[in-house]
Image 1 (spheres, helix red, strand yellow):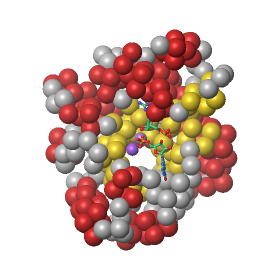
Image 2 (image 1 turned 30 degrees about the vertical axis):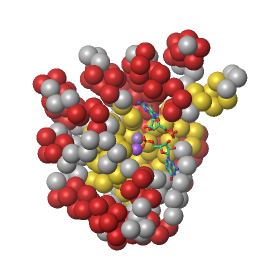
Image 3 (image 1 turned 180 degrees about the vertical axis):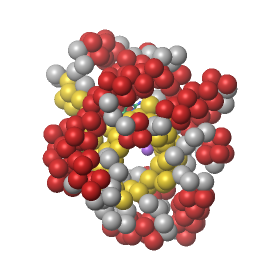
Image 4 (image 1 turned 30 degrees about the horizontal axis):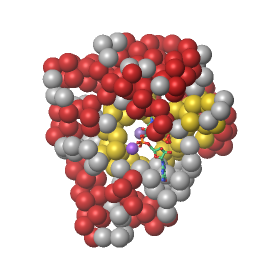
Length: 262
Ligand code: G
Ligand code: G
Ligand code: MN
Ligand code: NA
């Protein structure tokens, strides 16, 4: 496959770019984190989005080196945000900005994954609590010893662990009990249904309440309308992300936002 060969050289040349989408406090509007989203600026295809190459990279195993690059780069970028904003945020009683990084199942299962995370923390020097790994339910489905050990080790490092796209896969609230999960991202498809049906509303509110009881923070994804934000804030959902607040932006724009928001 042509895109696979291109991926090889793109990985070798670190020809990828990270974009960053803000995650905000739904009550105050404060910036609390960014989700890192990989992009591939391609000579002929223009800006290639992850939906076109992440699945390919997973099949071929190329996601392992690509994912390692993403983690290193995101942690470095977070270190720069911290240098620009942590002192002022601390003075205002706000914790340092977090960076959320997506991790695919193939990448997580690679034997070297935990070391890649350690290395990204060490080389960037960021506080582990400011790194969040977004895992899909497909990672957590395989409840073997290896998964339990790795999740415990990652939890002990002090990083945050999030379940991404919650509600779209084999959703099980027992993951929240079995693993050191600190965040849960409710999929956009549920947010789209808010205000359209009382059932959808009750479902989102119920998930938020249960998560809260278990000490897990909820992030509502794909918020596009002010009324969705208001409904979510009213039901006690603490965090949100979506085009209403901001689209994913490149590194310099994120850095400028960090300076403005501090
Ligand atoms: O903005 P968006 O088109 O960036 O992202 C599309 C999908 O690609 C999302 O499901 C997102 O989780 C995934 N994705 C984006 N960046 C990464 C990444 O660095 N690693 C992995 N594994 N998935 C990513
Ligand atoms: O699967 P994951 O949640 O990691 O990926 C997030 C995806 O959702 C990215 O492709 C991102 O660009 C996209 N996204 C973020 N906010 C919105 C939104 O408000 N509306 C839509 N349609 N997509 C969004
Ligand atoms: Mn995600
Ligand atoms: Na998601």
